[in-house]
Amino acid sequence: MPLSHIALPVAVSAVMALVPLTQGVSAADASASAASAACKGARTCYVDVSVAQIWESPDKVRTVDAKALANPVDIRGWFAAMAHDIDLRRDVPGETQALYGGKVTVVDTMTKDGVLWDKVVVHGQPTPRDAGGYPGWVPDRQLTKLRKKAPSGTTAERVTSPTAWGYGSRQALAAGAPAKGGTEYSFNTEFAVKPVAGAPSVVEARANDGTRIYFERDDLAKVPTSGATGEDVVAEARKFLGLEYLWSGTAGFGYDCSGLTGQVYSALGITIPRDSQPQFDAGGGAAPAGSAEGERITSPADLRPGDVVGFGSSTSNVTHVGIYVGRNDQGEPMMINSPRTGERVREEPLSNRPFVGATRFIGS
Image (cartoon, rainbow, N blue to C red; front, side, top):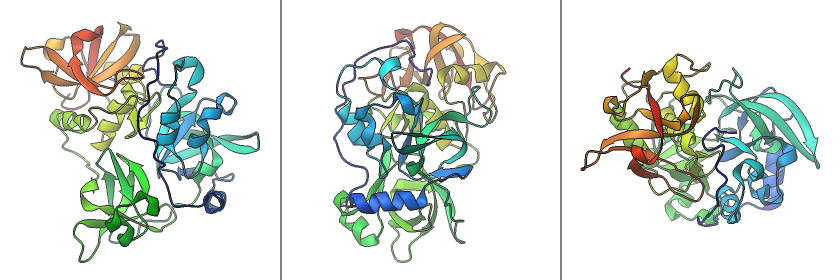
């Protein structure tokens, strides 16, 4: 489970609209599609829903979690259904999330109540818990062993909007009607993309199985390989101001604190650890496998925009992180962060929490 707020049992106040991520697909068709594309014993597989919740254990999944277990998935509906008081540690068994097309390694399987589950490690989310990636469980039906090679003439691009709707035809994209079978994908989801002749405002992407998905041109951009600045980090983070906190969230439907920092850096081509404490520790020479190394910053006076700021009772108990944005008109050091359940991404003074130091991943 993310180390973002491990001791904060607080209330959920989920008010996001209950809108299915994939609509216009019959239950029978969805079930048949998921069954045909499932991981089914393969060791290397790929996420085949817009965002897959990675669970602590199949034994801890609740009735309210049904919409997060399906293919197609309904993350917004799941989030909205949790409009009640919960104890985060006891009642939300989520570990992290993985985006569409993301690579996982399957290390074990089990069947629970007739559902096949895969124990996986999620690539691209470094953690000291496992050198291969972030560990957890996911329903097999949300994975696929199919991953068609990108066609010639395509480039790697990522969703740059908080979320973006993709459609199976240009006509459906032009209509802009989710009821016609569109799927809502998260920020930082990667696709193989090429332009559409005669339609500069549209791009053609490829799904895992090679089928076409059409997006608005402005919703995707090439994956950066170098040159990111701290100001770029701040600009990316500000896209999510007002987004509600979601425990274990790493997608544009809701982030936890370290999910926000991690995904913002990932979108700029920099991989940092998944959780709060390891993000902080990466500045002290203890970055886990697969993570960028950072520089430790101890004083707020030395911070630069884009630094990952850490908070907690000590340097060995970092329970929250944010992104330093600079000083406000009153000269106060400010950060952007996803605070806690029931609250939304916002900018606030560092002095609101017990600052213990920061990690600089850019310009160190």
